[in-house]
Image 1: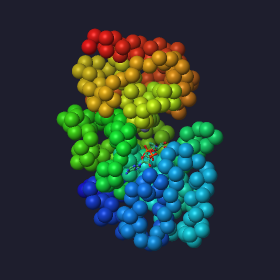
Image 2: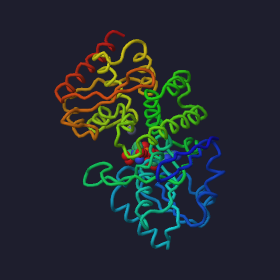
Image 3: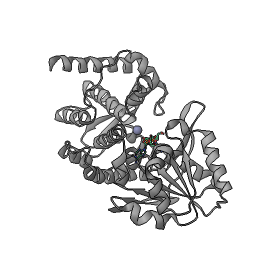
Image 4: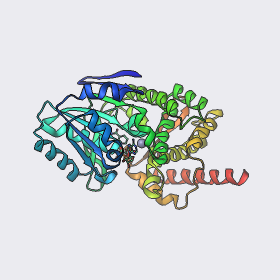
Length: 356
Ligand SMILES: NC(=O)c1ccc[n+]([C@@H]2O[C@H](COP(=O)([O-])OP(=O)(O)OC[C@H]3O[C@@H](n4cnc5c(N)ncnc54)[C@H](O)[C@@H]3O)[C@@H](O)[C@H]2O)c1
Ligand SMILES: [Zn+2]
């Protein structure tokens, strides 16, 4: 097991990562004045573990799924905390995936103007991404993550114990983000390449989870509030991935991130930003998770959704593309250029299928 810290100007979080982290640290860190938030799927599987570990600690169970990340559920959590007479010294425990982490984290930031928060991520995506970095939010007025706060957890306990029950789709979702880290970090890239056959092996995942967290800590330490551009790199593949996710919407978020990255990689190649063996290798990593990159119809319509990307400025679409091992770069395109590029990319993918 590994322990690391994230030191920011106004807070410090300790991250406990590895097999046994939950058993060893959860009870001790959480104490007796706590409030646990989890979701219905997780509680179905882990009620016994939760109730035996945190004896007589109130557990608030939200319905599983993104639709719970709303203001009603948020205020229900806050109300339940008052009903249980929790005070400003209490600790909110977000035990779940990114949905639970985001909403319970936001509740912790609001309750009594901010109480201790401990994240216990139970999905691969939450372990490598959402539990670290302090972004909390709900979806509001139809806009995802539109209301929230930066609120760093006091601790994160990322234990692969929870991954054993994760549906394959959720595993692939997390793997999508892990391969994305491969484009950002040379060591992660090499490790992924050496273990391309072990992607669903829990002990491999456990070790790569720590590497991804370490990378995210570096990025967040350099740009906690997402203002100077460093944190944008974590959004590699996301402009196109997110547009495809919203428009086509069948696969998991992480798979769309990789599909987006594949299309954006082809754009980078066509523009001479990325060349040689590297993009070919990256494609292999992507295809280890997404077996066949889809050739989409109506790609011009899907592209419209990229106009809402939060990275866009001056009416240009921002994509974060791979350049070389461990390096990405922001490319800005007009909408017309972007659509053309996506159409070229789709054609190239189609041609490669016809050749093979
Ligand atoms: N705060 C951030 O920095 C950040 C970063 C990325 C994503 N997010 C947010 O995270 C959310 C997505 O997170 P997610 O992918 O973890 O989704 P999720 O929380 O909805 O979990 C996915 C599914 O897995 C189930 N589940 C969770 N743990 C399980 C386990 N151990 N065994 C069996 N089933 C389990 C859940 O009930 C759910 O059905 C989105 O709302 C997104 O906006 C936040
Ligand atoms: Zn993502």
